[in-house]
Image 1 (spheres, rainbow, N blue to C red):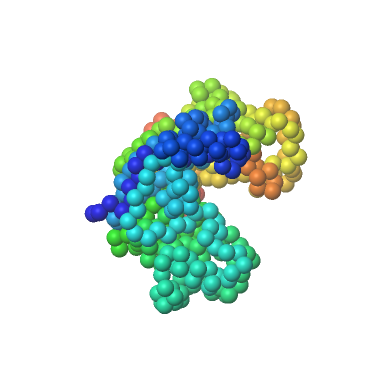
Image 2 (cartoon, rainbow, N blue to C red; image 1 turned 90 degrees about the vertical axis):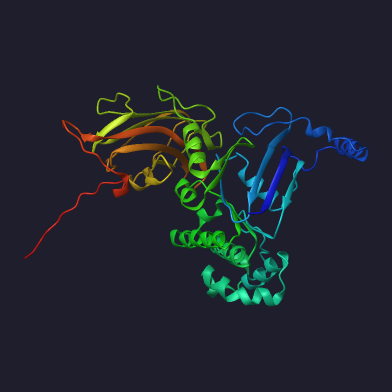
Length: 426
């Protein structure tokens, strides 16, 4: 297979809070160095893209020294924490922005679905935007018209196709955006995690379409936090961390590395300061523990025994009404449980300024195996105050409370136990 995408030592630097270098003297100095064929002096400074630490230089490397090759027909998954540089990399490959250093070689047309609404003009109708996107990809009107009915049908937006896009919901925009990108026959399709906006049925359609595209010998780059989708779709994977490519190779092996290196709480339950994927500074999880009925910390529970979690949550200011959520996933990222105080309490639960001690008891329906916990806290309007992914691992044993013998269980038969009642009539 021929190489269709090649990145050589690409890096991207930004000046925080500024457009350009920020001052006339810096711009003139940059121009003078470039005019003499010398390296940009402001590319020599800058800090690693660590979103949890303060920046003293005013410059940050969103990407640093990225190298890879992608062959025709490859389905490549890109994973990493929020802020790792995944979306910045896709923008460089899509030519939305240029690298600060290094070069990118591209063979073929690229169609990209990045942030919701990227590439759409809000004042134009859905139909007009289809033609606009096709023209950007170098297609003539007759070529686009031949695909129009298929695009509209796939998107499910027939009723609103002649309505200005500015009146579309985010889900409708994603539907139409993916339909356009996938059906205008690009040699390379780039999809950011915006598919999370769509409903489950549409996500399934998109995954099926991406498989079809790859099967036709075209190339797909896919960013997602859903490890199960990554395993199902991609053979090759990239793992990014703080703007650097830390591993590339077999998708399953890359996922294993990612899950193994995800920041975990300490033996005492203390959460590292850099563990948050998202944090506003308003609230911060400090500790998480799985405990038994005597409130003693444990890392495993008996089959069908309740799951008891204790949290320490520190708030900079008092919060009148918050949504606290807890998610339990398999080790390869399949989310099995998502519970929130919002759905289990009729009264609002305020938080005080300072330390708040929170507890949650979940009826355990999980089959024996290994699991991972994600926690979050959000304002009632949906704004995330703190979100910590895969911060605690625990096991469900194959033996019940007080029992002396257990059983072997295979996840192929399912992850969750449900009580059932059977009757047979003759």
